[in-house]
Image (cartoon, rainbow, N blue to C red; front, side, top):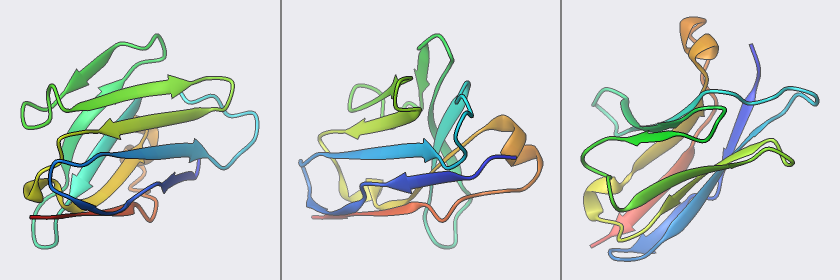
Length: 116
């Protein structure tokens, strides 16, 4: 498994934007398929979107057109650009790989709070 570190969360007003980052802590590890997830206390973690090693992306209907996932292979980092944020986007956001998920390993996530 590889440890992933999420960052970039914070407090933002509705309609605002944030960019989250996800970086592998282990040098030499290449991030391939990656998913962004979010979780609200008391609810199940939900998939926000994914990106493949080739840069193809897919998004949940709730964020389509507002969120964009991208990657910088040179920095071994995957980004989640969030625009037109809504109150209901408030959650802890996580990035993760399929292998980590199979092992039950999750990072600490980054809190995004959208004020209405």
